Length: 416
Image (cartoon, rainbow, N blue to C red; front, side):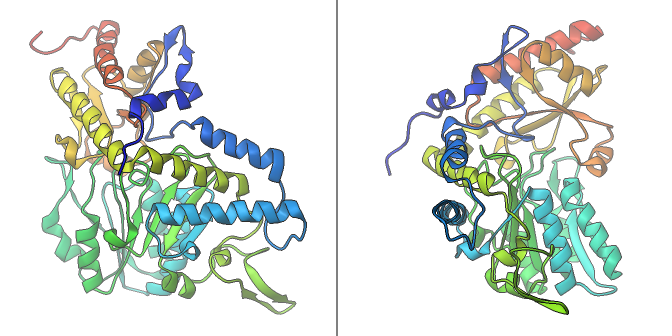
C-alpha cells in the first residue's frame, strides 16, 4: 500500500499550530486532554451548517434527507474505522464519559445481581470508575480492582485470575491517561470470556493513536471521544456487539428512541437509534466521520510509530534530569504518547505555568484519576502528551525548558 505524505507535512492542516503564545511559537503537548482539528474536519462541519443544516430522520424535505445521509454516512465511516461488523453497533453520545455511563447503567441492569462482582483497574479515569462504583451500589454488587505494579507501571498479572474469577463485567482502560500504560486487553478479555463476563473498554486514549479493531480486542463494548482524535467536541461513541445492544435496556428516553408511544407505555426503536434520544449531535458526528477519514489516510500504524519515537525521546531526555521523576513504564513500546512527571521542589501547576511562558502547553493535576495519583504517592503530576503533528524538536525544546523551572525554584539537576 502506498504511503501518504510524511506526517510532518500534515502540520500545515492545523491552523492553530501557527499560533504564538506571548511571542513564542506554540508547542502543544496536551493531546491527551484534547487534540487539534485539521482544516478538512473544520471545513466539513462548516459545509454541513452552510448547506445541509436540518434535523435528521423522518424529514421529507431535501435538507433533512441530506443531513440524514451525512449523519448516517458518518456512522458507517466510524464503524469501518474500528472494525465494527455493522453501523448498527455505533451509538453516538456526547463524549466517552456518557458512553461509559450508558454501558455501566444499561449493561449492569442486564448482567449484575446482588452479591455479584464487577472488575476494573486501579489506573482508571474517573469516567470508567465512578459509573461502575454507582452500578455496584445500585445492584448490591461489589467492585474489585486489578492492581498496578508501582515498579513497572503495568497491571499486576499475578492478580488477574483471582480477580476475574466469577466476574459478571470487566471494564478497563486500553491505555492509561496518566501512566500511558497499554493494557493487555485481548488477554484479559479471553480470561473474562471463560468466566462468562462482559468486557467494556475505555478506548479514549487508544483509538486516536493506534490501530484498534474491536474483533481483535475481543471486547463487548468500546467507548471513545471525537475531540481526542481530530474531531469536534460534543461527540463520543459507544460501540457494542449488536446482539448485546439488542438485549440492553435504553439509557435515555424521549424522541427518536421510540417506535410507538401510547398514554400507557412505549416501544423502543431499532438499533442504533434505541440509544439516541432527542436531536443527536449531527454536525459533530459528521465532523468525527471526517476525522476518521483523515486519520485513516495519515495511517494509524505510522501515527503509532511516530508517537513511540517521540515518547522514547522524551523518556531519554527526562531520565538525564536527576530531579525529574517519570511515572509509568520506562519502555515506550509499552505505553502511549503520554509522559507524566514530577520535579523536585516544584508544584505541577507551577511547572505548567512556567512552561506556558515558553509557549509550551502541558497539563497538570490529577488528570481525573485521583485514586491512582494517591497510589503514586503524589497529589498531582505534570503531563506532556504527543500526537502525530508534534516533532522531535518540540520534545527537545520541552525538555530543555524545564531548566526555566529550576531557575525559578532554585533547583538544579543532580550531578550537574
